[in-house]
Image (cartoon, rainbow, N blue to C red; front, side, top):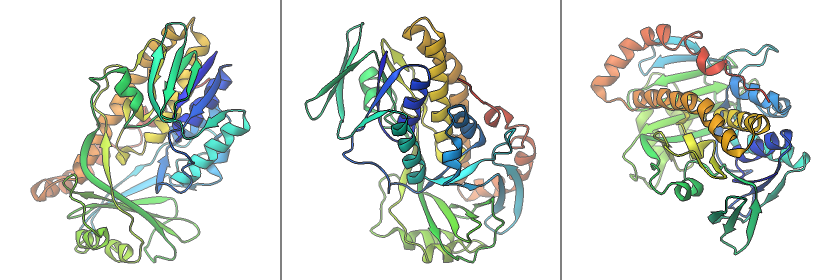
Length: 381
C-alpha cells in the first residue's frame, strides 16, 4: 500500500514515518520549492506530543534541539502573581514538555523521515485529486501527477485538500490576536530556566522563558483588528506593554520584531474523510497556540492513524476508527485553547474580572490533575 502525504511541515514527515512503521509506503509532496529551515519562531512540544514521538523512536532527536519548559507562572500586568500551572506532565522516563524553534523541529523530523527512506518532492502544489475507488491520483500545479492507495492531507490550516474534500468546510476563524516572537541574548529579564512567565497585560499578552544559556525566548499576543497592519510593528508593541510592571517593553525595544502573524483556529470540521482521502493535523482541527498543543496533536494523529490502518480490515474502517478516537479529544483542545485566547483579548472591564478570577480558575480548572486529560494521552503503535 502507498500513501500520498500532502504537505511537509511538521505533520507530514511524522505521518510518513508512522505509516512506514505500519508497513505502508509514504511519499511526501510539498507545495513550496524548498524547505522551511528558517521559517517561524518557536513552539511548545508538550509531554503528550513527546510521548507520541517516543512511540516512533524519534523523541530524543527533537529533545536535542529543544529547551525543557515544564512550568508556567501567571502574572497580571500590574505585577501580581496570579498562580502557577504545569506545562504538561512528566513522562515515566522523566521527560517534560520542551520548547523548540519551529525551524529546528521541522528540520529534525524531515531529516529523520528521509533517513528512514521517506521520499520528499518539493514544488508540488496540489490543485486537485481523483478518487477512482481503487486508487487516488493527485494533480499538481506543475502538470505532474502521483497515484497511490491513500491520500493523507497534512497541508495545514489553509488546507487545499480540505476545500476539495468538502467545498462547504468551515474556513479558519480569526482569534482577535496577532502573534510575535523572538530570542534575545543576555536580555536581563529575571526568570528561572524551565519556567514560562505568562503576563496578562493591560493591553496585550506577553510570555517569556530563560534558557540555561541566558537567552530569553519571548512571545507576544496583541489584540488587533484583522488586516490592521502598521508599517512597523515595534512601536506598536512597545506601546502595548509600556505600562506593564515588567521588562517586556524594554525587551521588545532590543528585539528585531518581525511582522506579526494573525492567529486562527478551525471550528469543528464536519468531514474528515471521504473514500481514500483523509485530513489530519491542522487540516482537520487547527488550534490556536494558546494551549501549546498544535504540534503535539498532529504527532498524535500520525501514530493513531498508523495503528488504525494496521489493525483495520481496510482504509474505510481505519478512517472511521481514526475519527472516532481523535475527534472528541482534538475538538476539546481547540475549545480550551480558544477560551484562553479570548482571555488574552479581554477589554478593560473584562480584564479586571479576569485578574480577579484567574487565581480561582488556575486552582480549579487549570491544575495539573484537571488537565491530565490533555497531557496523559499517550498513543501507541
